[in-house]
Image 1 (cartoon, rainbow, N blue to C red):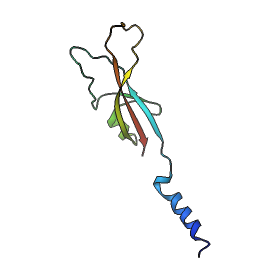
Image 2 (cartoon, helix red, strand yellow; image 1 turned 180 degrees about the vertical axis):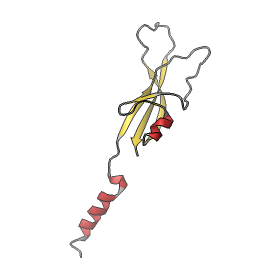
Image 3 (cartoon, one colour; image 1 turned 135 degrees about the vertical axis):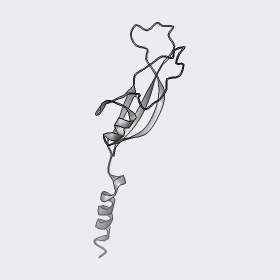
Image 4 (cartoon, rainbow, N blue to C red; image 1 turned 90 degrees about the vertical axis):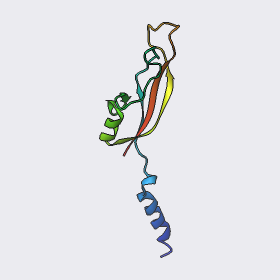
Length: 100
């Protein structure tokens, strides 16, 4: 039986969910500058993220397609071409998702 113990441990580790790599991606929203009417860029269920595998999706759609959100954060974004140099800093949201 001692000969098989290391093999059993190896098989148990290979079968555990933590030992398998999940598919993950980084998605981003559109970059926006604050305005007088909307000084804060709201994070809502209607906000579209662009993901490599899913295209343009909202958070609810990410879950409907069998993925889950791992983390979301706000980040500075480059100003689009043609934006005045004096324009306020642009912001977008970045989210990491994982296939479930």
